[in-house]
Image (cartoon, rainbow, N blue to C red):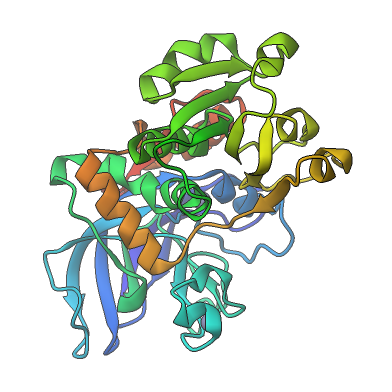
Length: 348
Ligand SMILES: [Zn+2]
Ligand SMILES: [Zn+2]
């Protein structure tokens, strides 16, 4: 079936309208009419081939929400009419140790929602800036938020799970002091989630004008990371720091804030490496520096259910399909609070 999409034929071309096809609904497939798709920084990097290996035509988008319109004969977990979501993963090998553990995000055979290998036309996956998608039922998530929140649920499928998974893994909760570095698309979710988990949350930002906004998101304290005195006041006090900043920066300044046995996890992917941290910052207090990439399918469902229970969505600004290039430029300038979401109905 041919549908409308927004994508680009080459790295140096702007995104614009195009037609794509979706496969027929197979026995284990769910067909979804997409209502909204969040705009992630990864979309921009992929569309412009700033990471190696973008395949064209490129249709980005992996924060997908919509309604089921058809299911295959063997599908048991979803039915037509259901509100559902699709995140960064549309397939995996389904039998390795990672898949068995529900950590499909770490499977060597993980297939991304866009730019991944597939037998479908045109030979690589095409993402959610499109009217419909067909996905194996295993990778389709149930949405239990009220329907009028659907657009603001979309960013949970990448920004939400990318921050929820490390917060859970490293035990954010009551009695824990948790830092969130960078208050953007990822960081604003990190603050909301850590707060709802019951942690004492400290937001780190370079912009003094974000202080009140970070508190409104749920931060108990806000530290201007360029202010050495403010930073020093928190030395050796954190159980965990979630660092969402993708730009290369001084990791030592944050490692020094961890308690003995504390961990800082990086979730931003810098185009050029961070300056090497000082080994003494690890050995003196048995600290760890770690990383984390999105989350598995069961954990993504757990995150959506947690957010529905706690009334958590992303703070979004809606755009029309023809505003995508403008949205990318504003994202590059940090001018969005905190996530753009495309209204797919404006595509027809
Ligand atoms: Zn993303
Ligand atoms: Zn696997």
